[in-house]
Amino acid sequence: MPAESVLVNFVYCHPVGHAVEALQYSLGYRRADPERRVGVVLLEKTAVELASWCEHIDEVYTVDVDVFEPPRHDVLAHVPAEWDWVVDDPRGHQRWQHDLFPGLAGYYELAAQHFRAGRGHLQVGAPRPSYRPRNRLELKLPGEARRWAAELLPDDGPTIAVLPGGSSPRWRYPSLAGWHSVLSAFAERWPTARFCLVGKLAEDGRTSTTFTREEFAAMAATVPDVAWAVDVPLARQLAAVERCDLFLSPHTGFAFAAMAVGTPWLALAGNDWAEYYFNPGVPFYSVLPDLKRFPSYVMLGNEPDPVEDDGPRSPSMSAERIAEDLPELLDGATWLLSGEADFESAMRDHFRRLVPLFDGRTDAIFSVDNLHLPYV
Image (cartoon, one colour):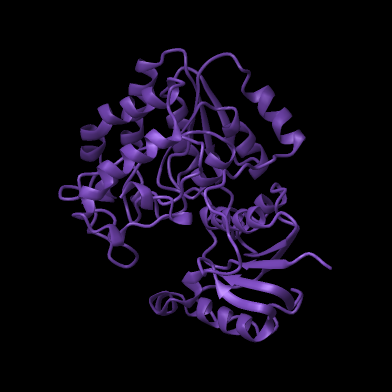
């Protein structure tokens, strides 16, 4: 009898973190039945190569979808239609998401017509097919990338990877002066530390870092020992991060991939979303903003007005906020670098601090695989 087949149809916006979510869910379906054939459908413009570094995924398909425009009627023609199970990204069926992303609604309408699921066409999180949560996602990076990273970052002291911002508009991340204060404080606390700058400046239709090369250079000048993993292939970036003891950034989906290579994440949290992806076994620490002073977590379409800080700035990324929370950022790094940090302690502490920010409304808190539920 042939192995049961499951297709994780996970097409959403193209930032890296959403691809990592798809890999995590695919792992849960494989762990529930190791004999299964597991496939995944990803947006063509996302970090699709991540799936090739996952031993639990058998087949990878990509689709050319613009979430703002109607998809071509044949966008799924190259994807096999017959599976035992097809499970969709639930966001593809949420009306408010359709209002924001009409192309997403069109894609999932086409998917409903295209796929012939012998046992069910459902959504991730449905009772079927069987699923086992709470799995550690581990990317198996190419040997070439790891060799390159080993030359870039010899194993001779603490190394901190820094991604100053993600793909959102530049004003939603700290100013150059804000990063100068952070990196100067880190270099003073750990004078022998090496810093590894990570980012992607090339505009190729995929997500890129909205900092400039000049800003990266100015950041590099702030610290005594720095390595560059900027504008190199994704495998090399992640191999460099894998060799680091800590990954420091604001909220960004690239941090999900950093945790998938085992590197603890120190988040300067804020903007739209509280951290919602946690990789079992990989510790983290989120420095949470004071929501009354630095409005955050207001979801899509409800951004707070920017403040003046070397131009417009997201309140939670402002110099005032950074100055207030810099001691906690250093303390979080101290814990993560101590060798004593563990995942369970990270989860308990994180949600102990997060739940009061939501005034006890635990229904407004979510996470991949619902890992937060035991802690709220």
